[in-house]
Image 1: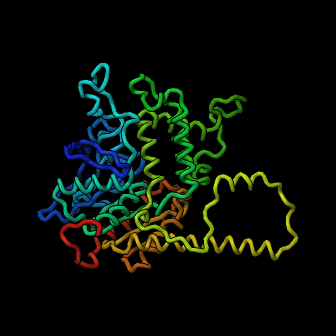
Image 2 (image 1 turned 180 degrees about the horizontal axis):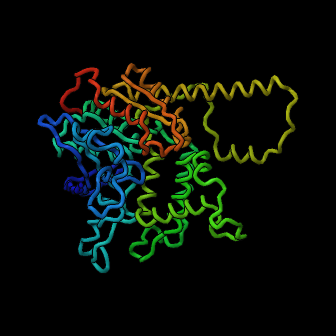
Image 3 (image 1 turned 90 degrees about the vertical axis):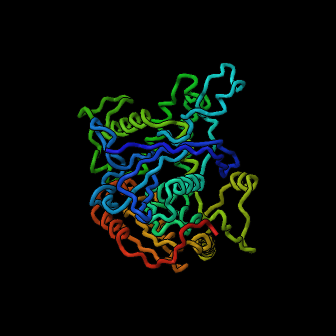
Length: 441
């Protein structure tokens, strides 16, 4: 049984978008006991739809435990007999921390509205980034008196936060656990997020984000957004094994209502999600994912021989140009393929160098975990992180876990995966060169 706590911060918070929150609240849950020298604290960073409620139950009526209850608890991978575990609901979320659904303090000023009644932030809440979340988490660390975290652990978007911690506050964590993650989103992943956002933005009940004031809710848009996302979290084999082409009623109904079991499942997941999540929060979270790039402060040096990116005019000319017949000159075609491969290799080399620069000053020990069937954040993306860490001589362990669940595998109780996390957190630290506290150098 756990009870969330509210931590209020009255000091202004300047965000990366150059907007400022005059004050903010963080909702936090803790598990286990903090030891006398505050050296056994583990920070859990949640993913897009997650919250502070990572383990346990809030009341005897709860039907579900926290979202990572199989990972956190007595004698589990993150053992609360050994560690003091902290999970924070990020700002911009809809589970209690300051976000689009909380009251905008500016709306309580006498002349701010015609009625003078308080109203939620809604679409007025500023865009946020992974760096902003890490900044607020560091502020909470100071409030709790935790100078150095024993470990910071996260899956998916939570893994991005763990990576950003290592870059921004290298002296404040000993271990970094990055699960089912990527150094930055691919164009395809950004595209999936944009489709989800457009599903919400185009819903007539969205009301430019002021649906709470209008007494409406973009339910259909949020359902579609979740359906798109959920498909990408699973694999074709997993969906085939679970649903196949099974019909709900056993026969074709020749209509557009639910016929296949997989349709029923997606609609159910979308409906349930729409009842518990906020549309403005979904927009904010997906943009934070898109913006994530720990190398942004370490720009890739462009080669003087590189061509610049095509302009809109270049693309228009290319599209207007009539198609030419395939060249019989096989040698020229091969040369074009080689040139393309060279360009890709060059870009990959530059990105690796940027990652090396970003990780060069980090001081923690890393565990990177990927899953064989995760096509949203594939093992190759985790290996990019590992390669950059190895190239800079950082202590890193890597495991690619065979699991059938796709990206959602990080939420499952897979013995090899759980054992790797447990062993990493309990193993002796390689060096004791950490200072009591520090910031990015």
